[in-house]
Structure formats: C-alpha cells, structure tokens
Amino acid sequence: MINRRTLIAAFAAAPAISTIGAALAGTPANAADLYSSNTALYADPSVVEGVDYGRRYRRHLVDDQSLQSTSRPVRTTVIAPHGGGIEVGTSELCLAIAGYHPADLAPTPAAGPAHDFWMFEGLRSSNNGALHVTSTHCDDGMARAMCAGSLNVVALHGCTASQAGLETGAQAVLVGGLNATLRKYLMEEFAAAGVRAVTASGEEEIAGIAPDNICNRSMLGMGAQLEMTTELRTAMFAPGKNTRADRATNTLPLFWSFTNAVRTAIQRLEATQPVQ
Image (cartoon, rainbow, N blue to C red; front, side, top):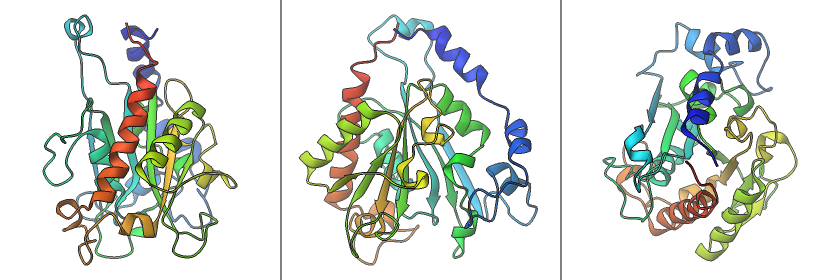
C-alpha cells in the first residue's frame, strides 16, 4: 500500500535542479550531446525558452477528500524528454497517452484516467538535435520532481532503425526500462494491437537500464522507456503532415492503436498498485 505521506515525501526528496546541475557540470552527456544537462542548456544565453525550446507539463493534484472517495491519486507520469522537433512525434504521443488529444488538450475518448505529463520540446525550424540531453542527464527540476512523486514513469523516445539494431525501414518500438512487469504488459498490448515491439537490449541509451535514467527515477526506482523508430512514428501521421504545425490534427489509426496499447498496459499495472 502507498499512502499520501509517502507520495508527498517523494516530491520533497527530489533533488534541486541547481544541485544536479553542479554535479553534472563539465561532464558530456554523450559524444553527440552539446549540453551536459538541462541545467547547462537553460544557462546558455543564446538559447531562449519559448523560441528555441519549450516545456509543458500537467500535474493532477488530489486532496484528502478525493483520496477517501472513488477517485484515486495519479500514479503514472508520461514524459517526452526530446519532444517537438528533436524526436518527432513524441510530444503528440505523450499528450495522447496521458489522456489528452494533442490538438486541443481535450480529454481523449479512450477509457481510463488521465496521467501526469512532462515534455521538453525543440521549437526551432531546424537544428533541434543540438537541444538533445541524454536521459541519464535530464535534470529539469519539474521533471525530476514529477517522476519522483509517481509510482510509474513511461518515457517516449525516437530512434532510427539502425540505432535500434533493426533492418532498414523497420517500423518498431523497443521496450526498455527497469520495470519488468510494465515491460511485459507493454509487449503484450503492442502484440494485441499489431504493433511490432522488440525487447530493448544493448547500450543503455536504448535499453533504458541505468538507475539514473529519468524513466527509472520513480518512487519505485524503475519505469519504462519506449524507443520508436523513425518509420513507426512517420506512419502515425498523414502523409505530408508530419510537421510540428500539422501532426496534432493529422493522426492516423496507428497513432491511436499505439496510444491505447500503452494506456492499457499502464492501467493493468496500476490495478496492482492500491493507494491508501
């Protein structure tokens, strides 16, 4: 059983952004990253929030009365650390899996509760890849706090088929992270939805197995990471409409099949997590 005090304590225990940034200062996230952490990126005066990048999040707060009713506190946070133009399509999926239509944030018709969400988005017309901060170095204060206050975290990422170790043109999702039960449910639900899913292995960035990966910074110290190939994400949007301006209003059935598969897997996991 998880009680409200435990949830609140987890939020309070989340590291301050300045402390994390200091710990990572001068340490490259990986060979491809320009910034060693989100803190380093935010400190760059040439990079402007609202112009070069944006951050969106929603936390669903509950009071003591709702805890005693049929309502329940949010147990899962959905995140897209490389949204917008960095790993295309992950922002829209993050919103939909959290329970909101990406076009207008209206509740989606899919059954089930809403989830908390957080995303970092590249807003540039080009060169958004320079804003990529690898998941083990994601130290955004809100992201850390929200993950630390959730039982479960689902992180959405994009990769190429080559990075995934798959054949050219593969439409697939790699399922990683340290939560073995959630990985199992995701694999089963993707199979039922007709989405090709592969168990992630190999390097940590793809497999999501490092304890300090943002997907594993939950209350339970484990979560799930979904790495979707470019071809899979492209197939979720109408041809010629895979742009930041058009994606949200031009989703195809595959987008919603994928979304509902993830939401169902989350519901199955949450059913095993009673909260008092």
